Length: 392
Image (cartoon, rainbow, N blue to C red):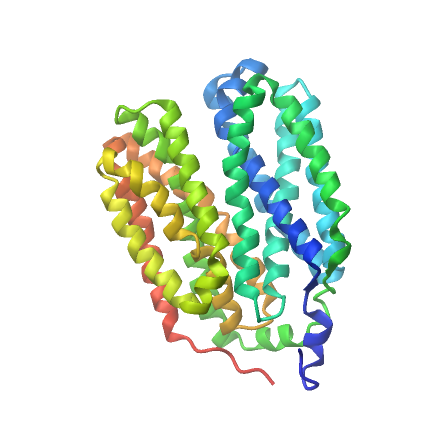
């Protein structure tokens, strides 16, 4: 409960009913499911739209650029209107993008539809994490971990659904996602999230530039390298194993197991946070992740270590947000900048690994993962020098 001396907290703290919290988890499941569609469908896209496989691969960049840009209107919306409205508009944008993606027959129009889909999910990703970071301190770590676990669950479920539906029926899958997005808008009534423009404590944070910016930029760098490591791992596990002599199906299964490990780990984020604080979970997890990456230089061992890697890395993303809000409470603008910049890791990571593989071969993949993780560990460790800001 807010004290009388901090009225701004009472007006801007986000409150969620149990139904609303479940709904936000459902939105993250939908986001993970949609994002995981593109890799398995690239060959199908190539045949369906009569384009080359490299051209079909443009859909990944198209979606990511849309997501990157989508953070901006989402942030503006949180500043000037209530969070419930931003969630609803973002989900409607997702519904429109997926519906068009399932109905169009032109490659150009398909890319435009995927871009629209990316806009919606970029706004949702930022909005959900910022809103959860503005909830009550008690239980915040659990809420962030649990809801973010939905992303990994969706990333596991959707490829399995594709197997059942058959990839050639992907238009129906996109239309189904559109319907689910619209259904999720009906459960937003339990989200109480006032606009941020009147947040006086945010303005106090912003005026402490000499103190704020070193902390903020450190977290920006840490999240860029974390996302680079997570996305490159998810994208290149299967290729390493296939080149190592294993089947495509096994490579896909181990990738799914990586996401399942991520889902399980984040589901237990709250209880773990009560035993180990956010800093220990992040630094310890990254240190163990380096060992797991290096062990994966053996393809046989990689079958075990990559699923474990997902479990080990699971707390890093949500606990980093908890750590930041402890150092700079009420800095929603800073959280938005971190989440915006982090998306650059989705380009840097897989692209860098691709460049390394072209020069040194697939054997470099686990070393690249370990390199990203080591840099990330060093950046997070450097943040230990900062103490929480004191606000009046």
